[in-house]
Image (cartoon, rainbow, N blue to C red; front, side, top):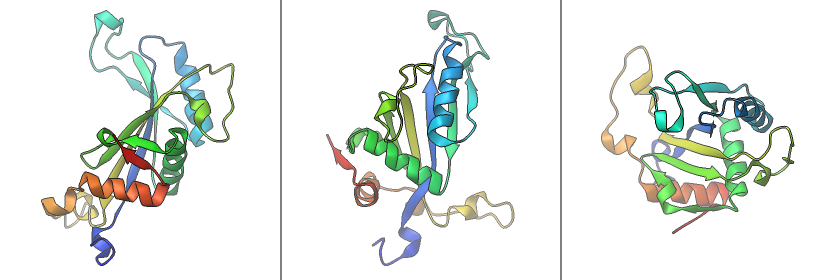
Length: 172
């Protein structure tokens, strides 16, 4: 059905790379350097929203770094991240129009070598999918609504897209 109607085809809205460091603020610079090395973009810091005494985290404390990518950059980093996971993803990684998985260590990315200054860090990869026509709900003028059937993308359709476009093997 997606081949006949161009409005039914799905595409990547954005990809977010996130590294959480917890209460260890010394690792923040390493996380920033790693994200900049992988994406070529300037990462932003993430701050805690509440106090967690068990983890020694106070409100407003820097607890990680993240980068948001869109367009061709998002597609290329998602391809590299899937390759870093040996092109294997679980079914549970796909839900609610998104794909979320982790990469244990950054050295699994192709073309990236171990840097002793950074150490060993892993990261989370979150990709959001959408269909054409989403803009009518977010534009400023003449905003309108899209049907629920148009907004929701079945998990099987996302899995088929990932297998076709990135060669990912979706399984248990």
